[in-house]
Image (tube, rainbow over all chains, first blue to last red):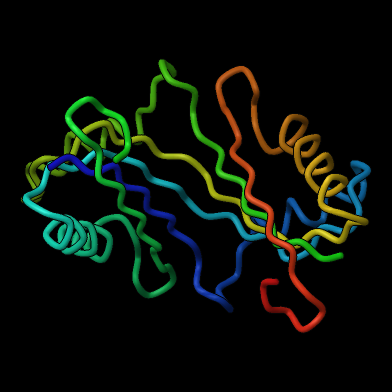
Amino acid sequence: MLFSVQVEVSLRDGVADPQGATIERSLPHLGFDGVRGVRVGKSIRFDLESADEAAARAEVEDLCSRFLTNPVIETAEISLTAVDAAGSAS
Amino acid sequence: MLFSVQVEVSLRDGVADPQGATIERSLPHLGFDGVRGVRVGKSIRFDLESADEAAARAEVEDLCSRFLTNPVIETAEISLTAVDAAGSAS
């Protein structure tokens, strides 16, 4: 089965996010008020061929903890969607 | 009203993604087969104070097209959730 996978990698609460802080500090000067708590993370999307959803999820979790994230400072949120042979979401 | 906003910034189809290509090329050597079409984007989360959902969405769309993305090569997908005063999603 083919799965469409999205992994959102974000910094853990309490870990400094200089990129987010820079965006937040700049926005009022650019005319956007009322924006608070900006946090910037990564969004990784890919297709995965796997036997079933449980196997796919286990493989993605392993992939995340070993390569896509630094588990000391980052967390990953995984979304899996089964895709049928024609390529549309089922 | 306070809104919790997530913006996913991804490269448009057809735009080269060297970071995604590097991940895809490396994974088979690291023991992960069956991963295809890796694309790496950004995920930006923040809280926004706005009068109502329509105003919040308009402000976020403006913010995305002017500062958070390069519209020539990137697209943004916006998710808005209203948050009540106690801080939980409503």
